[in-house]
Length: 436
Ligand code: UGA
Image 1 (cartoon, rainbow, N blue to C red):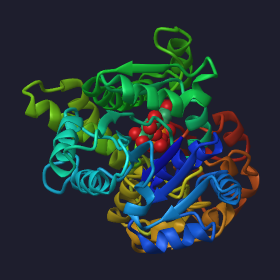
Image 2: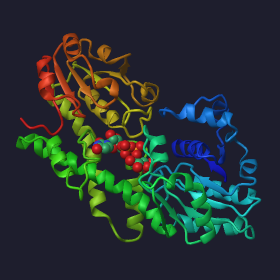
Image 3: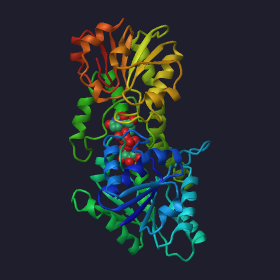
Image 4: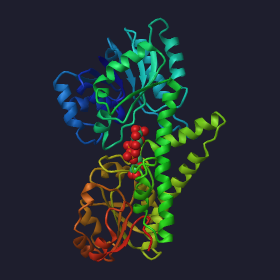
């Protein structure tokens, strides 16, 4: 199959590279010349484990190429995937669809074959209908069909997620479009663990938001349970295991922590609320999730201040991990931002280390001393706060860390260390959801 991918962000680049690895011929298009030029030199615009090797291998094999020329990229394609951003619109939180619609118009005008336009960007229910309207207006007689194919990959595990998804969702009622999508996903669906679910287009659009909102709800639920455990003398990790072993609940996404962040959950939950409001069917559970999660980030900053005895003025906090999750350099809506600002508002000095996120973090945070490595962050500090669970923080020499500090306070917002182990190393330990 000949596939064109519009947009080389996380989803576009990973999907394009993986499709090419499955033997399809893929052209990735992006307006950003610097990005395309860098990709030509195998310099990735994002940090994602394994992506550079995957891209290089397929570029060398002639299966994958990059261009800024959309019209050339679309020529001869069977399917054109739209994977451009749908950021929160300033002011109202709706998904900003202007990039999607602009791309669709250009693609429809450039098409020289009866392509299937497949929306992979996360878009509110009904967007496919609007895309179809634009196509009919821009290219009335080309036989272009429009389908929805949301993506469920996670940052940091993107290639594995794309190649072995739990399911593939394709929304279209057009049999020809289904045939094309079946052909594209055949290599993945041969693996029995990744079934293709064909649905109507609107249903596919809702599935994407419902999945993200449900996962955000699961996280927020266990985070509130953690708060209860802390005051009631229980252990949230055991609670998560105790409920997660029930197959109806499932053990995943029950890690209590500083609240969810990233480029998807915060933006998508907000956009879903806007859509639901527009339809006159408010989603009260999701509303609560959004506000509970927002409040949680600063509350985690206050938790660190409390561990410092309630006064952070003039004290130094070493922050380990800044990105919203490990194995990415993505700082978007990372809890670390609100946590650090809360500490700074209370007069603390913040020293921080992140294995990949420092460059992005420098653009978002001021007056933070960025250091190289966890031990440098702990040097002379009054507390160390573990904010992101990078593997590099899982086997720290805790005695050495404690030995470098002025006060030996460890606030482990990801529950990486068993309290006894930290206490043996001389720390006063504060986990999440671990009651006295
Ligand atoms: C999320 C979804 O997991 C993907 O399925 C989806 O495709 C993607 O959004 C998207 O819509 O593009 P992602 O944001 O990359 O993926 O990362 P997650 O692993 O889901 O983590 C999101 C946030 O939740 C992180 O801040 C993480 O620390 C937090 N989290 C996750 C928890 O606090 N506890 C958990 O148990 C799991």
